[in-house]
Length: 539
Image 1: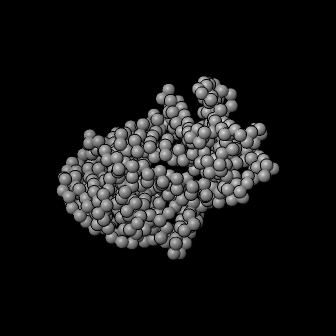
Image 2: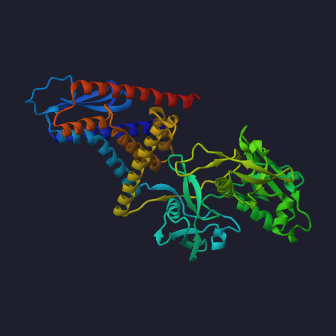
Image 3: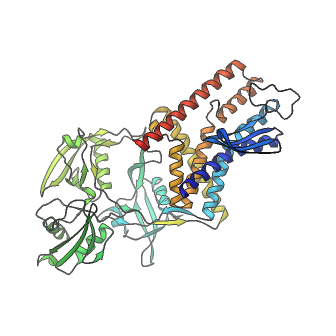
């Protein structure tokens, strides 16, 4: 029931505010509005107040306001002061523009209220993983550090961290931290260039501190030597370690801490393999406690599954080079790697220079080396070529620590709402441009079914998530309606602009042709997005 309620609230709010914008500005200019409808087609509910019939119609593909004197086939007397066609071109322009503008204002208000009330769920600015020997560790970062400021800028979420680092590639930044103990300190760390997915699914240059991550590795093990203790105990790659000697574990760091710091020879394991719980016992050798960390790791065969190959697609460079599912990647380009992220960066760096790279891997306890020639990723952006070798890793990561960000300061809330609204306007425009140029597949377009699913899921998850998606969809609708095609509000704006320039309306024949083309475009678009929705449901 809550799922359906979420869909209804979103549809009525986003469509209703759009049509109310047209209605309100039309009435302000003295234009009569005959019908105000949410939905199209047969009317389910209708009620007349004053000159306007308010109704809910059966087809949830938008809404409309029937404005007196807007249709070409209406015979309107020149003396009819309530007719749209008799109003100055500037007023008609504002009436047409009011719908999309109200969508932007609605998004602004929703985000403002969200910032002041429910808040927004965001990734906490906490270092959940710090790799040994990396720039992060050498600079002084520790697991659990909370980032308070970078270069004097207040940090409230991990997005703030990423934003500052993106603007400081190649430079050092000053970072104010708070340890788990409450101690505060300032350290300096260099920012290097890496790659990451943008909001529209294209790879772009990103800033990062080597070895510093917001997500911890989940406690999934990788087995690369059948003679190791864990292998002999029966563990397999992608087994999840739940407990060691009754100590519950969630992260790979906790697994290593228990194994490397234990003072007991007898180890009892509880492991999850797919949907089954397995228990096993092992005994550490007598000299285990005098061994170095690397020697302990080798005897145990204790490796995270993060660098074990999960899949090697057919006919891709990795398969041609001999790599197989289950291989443990040890070094890339001669550099020993500790994380999936380091592997990706090393591969991209080498491919940009030579188009190929050497990879050292371990299979069944034996180390091998091979050379892999890359292929260009179709998701590369115009200014960044990304390379593929054709492997996916068993890179299980825990969900970052989530906090709720909100503020009691109205100015800060308004600043947040305005920046978010502007950001989603920019994202929507850029995505539409890339759809036109073919950089983004039209298969990504969603229609009413997919939007409804998203609304229902967000409403059931949390009200703050629902408010955020409602604001984003309102922005999407606003931008979409500014497209200069007949039937869209942008088409009316285009006609008004042409009339203002020519000092007379566009010819009746040209207007009819444009309207027919616009209607045809809308019909094709509706059919296509509904097809995408159904294909996503039924495959």
